[in-house]
Length: 392
Image 1 (cartoon, one colour):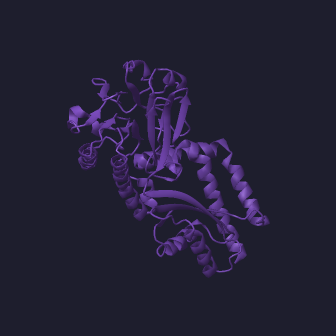
Image 2 (cartoon, one colour):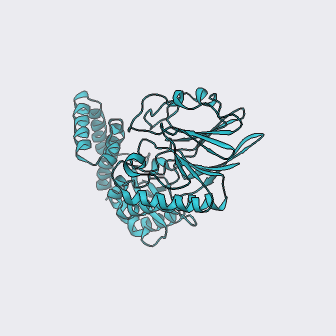
Image 3 (cartoon, rainbow, N blue to C red):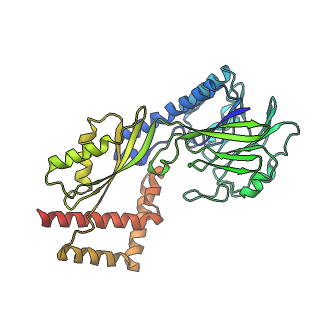
């Protein structure tokens, strides 16, 4: 019995933080999430899996984006017509899957929820509970059905498990309790980096986000094929995703003029190309003359002639050996100021005001725990400007 497991497709994600920096990349990412979902359905059909499993967060928000819902129904209908049923649950972003508000999804598409937590398909029993609100602070596990005797029992759960860096505690569940519930397989969602857990004959799979939306999700881009047999479960990750993220580090400190910088940028960015995929690059440069704004402009010009590579963000730094008494004294004084309680309090207040004024989708870019990183970037830019003025 083979299953294709996916989660966290986030169809309809607005991609606003990237779109503000690079509108072309934002548009490409929106399309990539759809193209990737089509690719996943194609895989389910070509592999003729027993069932296609979606462990929540199929959509990205609760807005009435019925176009995205129609896209989902169309794709799952393709799988159904090819003999592949779909079993899914609602995650914390899935108000569009509310069957009471929007109706059923179609034949051979099984949405599991509190009123219908189990569906039996041949020799398999699928069990799952859906989010009815955007946040659930307690474990779902005590409410899950008991295993069906004589069947392969497969659980679907959208959960942060014991907790993961960068993820709020959603329907937290102890891994030990999960693996001891009596199911053969757990198909999990919510954490965007893939992993597997094995305990005897029990397998738990977190397939990861199939189409990463930003640099922090660059370890996603996968789905998981699972085989359930008499000897236990086996799994195989499959790479999907039409757009990936990578990092490129370039030392521009030896470049004597703009021509050399352009040549260095082109050589470095050319290495990011990947056959059959678009790549968004986070560019880190070292220079005592070329700051973030100028490098961004030059890199954008270079990328106009490189197919399939987009600029995500540029970060600049001074060479470690760079030294100047005047500028370094000024930078040192600024760094000392950063540690003052009054300065930090004022900076945090400004961050909060900014968070309230910008779209919620990009508010995390200015979260309180990002203060030190933002201040460090600002100091670096000031330092680059000062050193560039001296070296010219």
